[in-house]
Length: 449
Image (tube, rainbow, N blue to C red; front, side, top):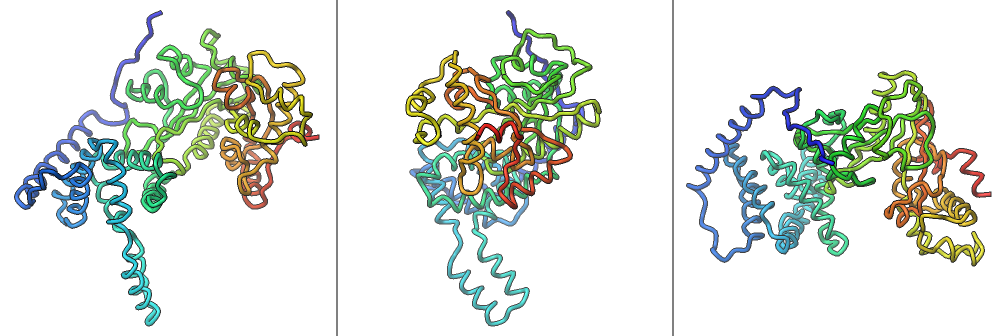
């Protein structure tokens, strides 16, 4: 079968000449800045490593005050980072952590002045002293056309090595601190993704899908039919590059299995009797934005938009994996929960066919895992933490709901419905964080009996 590939097109909301005009202006300013820098710059030692050259560009950017030269330097730093060999990244990150760190003596001096004379001027001096120079560096890099994308990628690379290199923690905290402000929900734009969306956006949806793999253009088109929807958040600094997106299906009842939602050969007409919205996949697109919350706002925005468009919609529910369940299952002594014989059987690799007693045991163990197993004060499972923290209720647990290889390896085939009750979202959110209460249906709670 020949796959249909959508035509590339510019977003309708952006006038065709706007981006070109802005690009020409920035290019002109940067060219002027590079001419200024060329007249001032001393030659770099021939044997300097790529990381050393990049660090020197960063020092130069911190020292410059001119707008044109600063913009040119920010652009050069972004290009140099993208060209930096993987083997040189650690040296660059190490320099950010040590050479661009807070000066303890400056902090002590500022604190002493404030102790002697506690006024606003001395308090401001403390604020300046405790901010690492790299934060100013990151803000200046962000001025360049590719600055934001470069910094997001930089943090993504940094997070890959952070556990083995705790010295870099300060760099990560500074980037995250800035991203929380730069990616504030007030700057985000929600768009519906459909078959008429720009081709480069559709390609990114295929690439970024992290929950249920999209197998080519036909599969994507199936997920964008009349009975399906896809919504994404975008940021002005990352044009046509989604931050997070959610895929939904319209159904007549709460689903208990994944396969019908992903089936391509189906009647795609939107059933007028459909009263349920199923969020079956939500994907964060950029590892460098880990810990910056978008998904909760996206789900709530989608709920409000669909409710306004189709007042007949009554139920908003997820069909979610339990990605930490099988890992916990294999690592835990279950003797107090099931018999030794059954413990051995529930820990066996999942097959396509599951015996009834194993099925029942797995569902009950999953209920225990979601309600009782914690990481600190919160549920151990990351998807449970997300939806429960977002104000959802643990509604149903379904065994043998996802028998794909990934579903069996991560969740033992189990999937969960988290219900978004529009009248209870804020109440469930507050009790979850204030009192540690996990809102769950009676059916789920009875599984622990």
